[in-house]
Length: 360
Image (cartoon, rainbow, N blue to C red; front, side, top):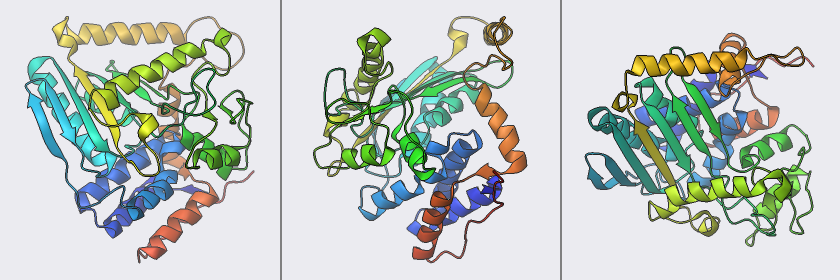
């Protein structure tokens, strides 16, 4: 189905009001999820409602809880999320990190005892909108199987980077594993197989069935899982993806003194986040720095290339998706629509999602 973005955002906000979140908090959650769908990041958009619903009902996410600032200096912030919604504490933390960086040039914030916070790029772009460089990372439940191992230990551990340019900011936002778990969920909902060397079973054999991957990661003792960037073999540099994921683990669970990914799961919900903002003015004229980056990206886009498709840098596809989806509506699979409507019905909300069928 294609559904107007404003309709999707309004529906999500009403759902979170139904859970007991405030109007302001519900609107923020709806903004982050709809933003992901507009950008074509369907793994982190409205399809996440079902996961959040399970966590709220299991009291892993507690709508009425408020976070606490444990420590702070003029350039740092340590926050205990107290198991609230990840989007709420993350927006709060990044807002304060940006404010501190505007006054002192650089600032870092870490959060513990949190939950899934949506797409990391949303918070990195908060810094870029203020003319700052933003770096954001989070650990996750154990999904990533290290090289030569048979069971997951690290999370998908995404890392996002945003740098202002003369136009839209340059944004790179990706898991340090081959793929996020949300994309495996999207494949299942669309009856598609897992391509390439994304995932393995407990014997390190390539796994192409998304249902099997999700089932094995739902066990009390997880087996198999998602591979690091580089896939199965060292010859494809999988040790680099593994190393990148370890770096994120250091910046999140370790630095925040929360739980590492390996200790998260069915009983322990203690995700940690990392936020950094850096003012380019520490090193020169921000406008000249932005112009230099803009020029570099344009030179890449106009390199000689093979085939009819143009060269794109990270973020280009997302910007194109926004223009298209604002005009034509957000694409949502039928399984997600059914899940969302079931949640609304259970919460006693009159809203229902419906839209225009997509012609094959």
